[in-house]
Image 1: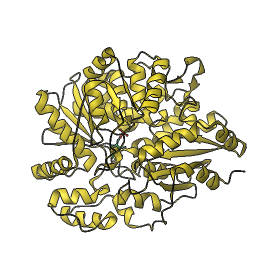
Image 2: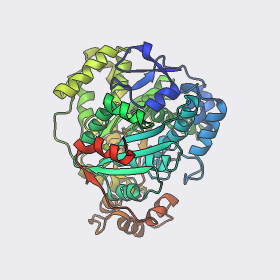
Image 3: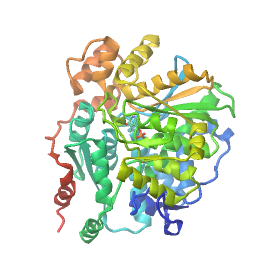
Image 4: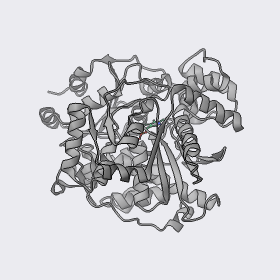
Length: 496
Ligand SMILES: *Cc1c(COP(=O)(O)O)cnc(C)c1O
């Protein structure tokens, strides 16, 4: 199957391995399938399939240039003993909602689902494309992508990872994870700015032709581990299908019944994977886009105007502190019937003027499948408290955004459709907020010390992913100005 840019003509389409290696199209667009595939499964197959089987099925559907054996070994490597739950994605029922727990991987957030897989795909793509240069994974992160991509790519031959994250914009645990991850091919650097500054600069560096030439001459080439990379997005479709199958299997729903998913959203990758699952025929009634106080998307789904000209808030759900949600571009491409010129023009307006408006028709389409809402920092804490009080189930602040918005949606609409809340991080990844929400007292410590405090409060076994946080000593943090990001890359790679 071929992939094209959302901003370019389809004659420039690439194979899937080439699109995965490229990461981001040279015209600034994102890779999407030229023809969206038809499902290679029947709905009634889903309850019988394991997570690994569904993952292999979806990857072979979208990435058919990889051989069956390559996909099989990739799936086995990605979803094995580094997960603390053998089902990979356990589903919990609490207070009438289902929580799809995506945080049982090595860095305790849902990014692991895709970032344990992407390095497997990348190394195989490099073989298929017969590339002899080293692949430089250049990544902007609001916290979790950085940790998960460093972990996923650590010591993978022929790859190096350079991560840029906002100084003071990630949680103490995320920071510790990045600064203590072992691997001689890894680098994490703080920038004086927020996530959007990092992401904008990364996109700029990607599209700097001279820099690209210089890299190539030195035997390197860029790729991306952000959800802008199609190789990261596709593996995320699997958990929507798997969860649906499991709900049928447990007789919580009947085959063919519709479900709702509420998705804590930042860069719009996770929820877009849900939209792709729906396009493959999964019976989804609504995808509910949950934001924190950076609620650009809530306004967008209400009015059809995307307007980033607003204050940037640092919140207690930092992985969602984003004003420019890159993957929305893929959704718009679809809703504008693949009109790449229209998409290029909208994205250009966003860069130039800070906002754009979609047509009424497109807004109508958006509103038939999506709903949206947001939670403030206080509402996040209240929601963690409410859920904990009900039956001692503990959720993290990002999941709490989703849980709150799901509840708000239900009471506003009276929609009785079974609700799945996408649980995106372990509560131990954000122990300070969770501790405060549960006990009503400010946590006296941060980082791993706060994990201990929270554990004292909650009891029970700590997962292996949490326990390893106590092991390694972090490096000293490096901080630079965003304008010096390119220079920093040159120096790390020792470019001539
Ligand atoms: C990245 C992340 C999100 C947002 O996901 P997107 O795909 O960027 O929308 C939500 N919660 C957590 C914990 C995350 O790490």
